[in-house]
Length: 405
Image 1 (tube, rainbow, N blue to C red):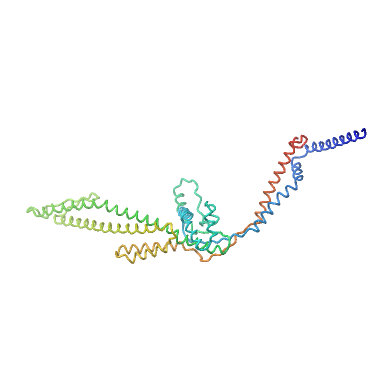
Image 2 (cartoon, rainbow, N blue to C red):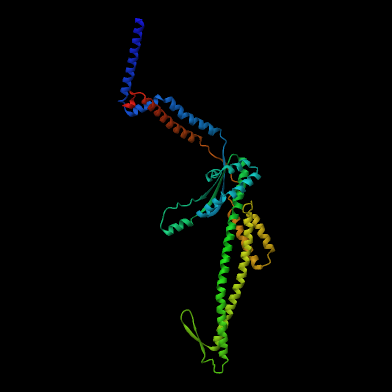
């Protein structure tokens, strides 16, 4: 029994001695520089830091290496665009009705996977990863300015080129997708411009017709007044005492000058003015009738566009319709207007012609090295922070830990 008790006492003494030695080591750590203690802490958790840094970088590198390649194709249009026109173009392209047209065309081209991606892309950012537009040169930044000339120059700035970037999973897929997107940009999007132009033309000719209606009453009243003057002068000329030398009529022009004419010349002057007024009224009536015909024609054309705006209707089909209207038109003046309008509409196709028919499809760089390096440094920071947190947690339960220094 004495021997056993003696052994227990010796064990307790050894434990106290080891604890004392460890405590002295911890107490000595308190006097070390903070930087040295930090490196000692990291070295103590070196396995965690190495694994936490290398594992994410290697995993990301392997995933990127095995991930299928993305391909991109770029189309360039030589088209001048102000910033407001560019923003309107984007809103039209990314509108729900326009995307539905593209999706329908993709299904016809058997690009079902890409059509599904467009359907699942519910934000403009997600759509931009598939189909993206860029104007060049870039529009100037709209800084706060009180100078009207500077603001006007910024608003009038025009980009010269329009780039369309299309991204897909395979070269075979890009052929069908590119055909659908370029057909939309070149043939379907201009339909919106045709609609706006028709609305503008209708408004313009309505204003012209309204001006004639406003002037018609004033011209009619003036014509009646001149006829009454002529009637009185004719009566005056028939009196026996009237002579060319002593009967005159005073005229006052806008410059307050006066001239006196013999009676026969006064009669001729009023007759000439009456003729001018009658010719003006007759000319205005012809213009008014012509304007009403133009308004009616544009209303019918706008109805065709509005009925087709949600369908895959193209400018080429609209031009065919205009050609049919021109062949059926019997009014010479209206036919001339249609010819002019057809030429203006044809210019939309010329403006939306791309540079190069078959651009090259390029693989999108994966940037494995740069992304893996970024993942390595992020993992290094996270693992180092984790090591510090673990050391802090351990120090909370050890009163002799250096953190209590």
